[in-house]
Length: 90
Image (cartoon, rainbow, N blue to C red; front, side, top):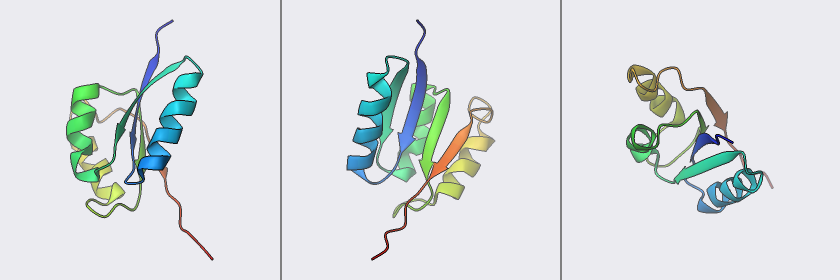
């Protein structure tokens, strides 16, 4: 079976590890983690994902900004992006 490739970009290492573990456990996905938004474009070019899960708020790069740069790349502009974010409340 041809596994789909998912790039997960989030500054929270525990979240990217959990997503990778759970998605790969299905046997249907190969997952690459990137924990620095500023390196997301480079990671996407190297990995060639079928889908990108992208955090909206990261300390080094805004998710919208990263998505815009992805859209400017002819090899990546048609890759779907899912924005994922959490806002802690107490």
